[in-house]
Image (cartoon, rainbow, N blue to C red; front, side):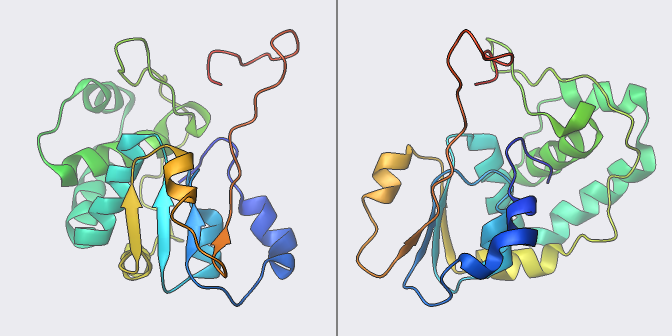
Length: 187
């Protein structure tokens, strides 16, 4: 997924400075999980306050084939009208909510995640057409996530579970001073 503050750039440049031997891996601000997927730890505790994001990772962990199947259908049906239809929908199953989340992430404007005061996703459609990417490997993602505890939680309670020898990657959202922040509402 594309995620504001994502760490693909970090992984491509600085993976060599990250320890390779550790107990459990902790990431309390998961976002796209770029470092988790790059390190591929056997045991991990992954968390984010965004419950929809966490549910999506959980659905991939539990049933990647079903999520992929729905995404393929969305790929075939993708259009501006379909985007707004899906954006306004309220899927009942975890699988279709996960597929909706990924679909919107990939087809909305700039991969932005934003909700209004009612908690409704409100980002307009973007210019990207691809819902399924050549780089997708949901099966592998599912296998990696099998060794992870995935939760929507505050970072403090997640970090407090770490012990000596564990690796914590804590990269919180950045908030500049109010007078300099051009994106205050998102923060």
